[in-house]
Amino acid sequence: MARAGDGGERSSKRRRGHILSKRVDAGELAAFKSRARDAGFDDHRAYLSALILGKEGFEKQDRTALIRALGELGKHGSNLNQIAHSINSGKVSALSDTDIETIKSARASVEDVASQIKEILT
Image (cartoon, rainbow, N blue to C red):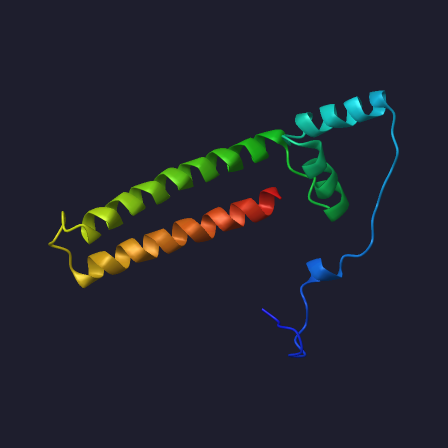
């Protein structure tokens, strides 16, 4: 991360100074919210952001599948945490270095895939 005075390039989020806006009436807003739901977005603001950033092309089924996959990854992450807790509390004592590295690798993979899915959905 760039720090003040280090000459490093700043994040593009810090340089976002332009605002897009459009006034709509109640009927137009309701129609837009309906299109957002039909496209698989829970929030019309997320749909608007996806439209602006060019990420609105997901079919509802694709978004739903990704959200389900994210939920499943959360369950696997929870299971890995339970294994780690059992190891750390001394309930499991017969693990090789390979076993521990496998668990660490699996945890890193779950976190990586989850962050990629979140990036796609936002």
